[in-house]
Image (cartoon, helix red, strand yellow):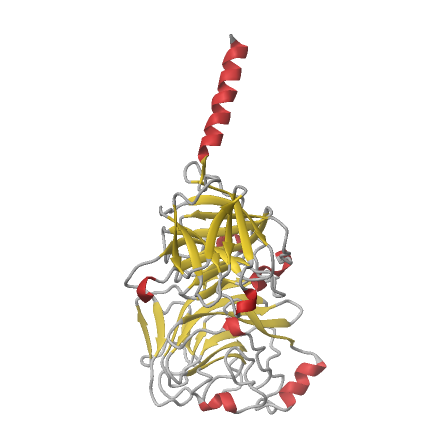
Length: 448
């Protein structure tokens, strides 16, 4: 009797486990799916969905007729030749947004040399949320003619992707809570690329009893929820440097209090208000009350038309100078319209550059339109290596204290300041340059 009961229990357990997975494709036809966007061809062959490129048509999407919120999704993917594609999730098509254009999260399929397969892109909305530069150790070369196992875990605001069991991207975002899946056939550049195909099979989903993979705390997390520390970031040691509501932890540069004018806190955003466009002539710069040595600083900023500002670090206030306090500066600028972009040397005063010292590396996926939120990051390692990042792309890399660094300082506007940028610790500064610029989600992790 005990043996019979044990066998019955095991059978029920296996049955329940199998029931957790639901197939989204019956292997015979496209029941449960519909096409949106362009006119690429979709057909069923040998138990696979095959998408085929067609010339002179925009991105095409084969979408599920149902929407899904929290889930674990899996599918196998193969390309027959090198062209871009992706799997949409929590995506939408509504008449009020770009005349029904498909938009939402996408797990990238990318056979190009940049190797961003597995990254998360926000189709027809914000662009790249998690380019694979943020997890370079897990980048791989997506080869044609080979099957890859794709997995997406969406539970609440946590979005995670995996390829062949390896963690690729981790995003926290609350923009879209539910939506459809879509299999993308990307638009092609010319008629010679017509007839290329991508294949999907073993498409399945879990929506109950979800058990996500353990968080990888060694991975960079891209958190788009304003003024929020995600559970993973908390484990990694990040804390908010600005609480999103008060002036706690900040004061005016060269002051013992927060400026009485020129700055405003509203709806979780810290505004430096527009004035004359001059440096530190209204409210003046603000600095952290604490000082920092090695750290990772994350922040979001939004530029208005023709605006100028910056985030400085290793600010000691020992110079007692007029104007903006002295420090290494992550430049914030409207490159197209502010004249400072054309000053300095070879672009070393442009957005995310090390101001007046090192120009940024130009990357087309690093930029946002004026009026959109940008993600900035400054990493200072204990050995004095320093990185600037813009929207998930590394744009500057250098090491202070080297002969090269001193040579750069000697030919810059900082040549007369002794030991410029070489303090062991300093304040972090947000600059008032007389233009309206917004900040939020300012967080820091100290490094040993």
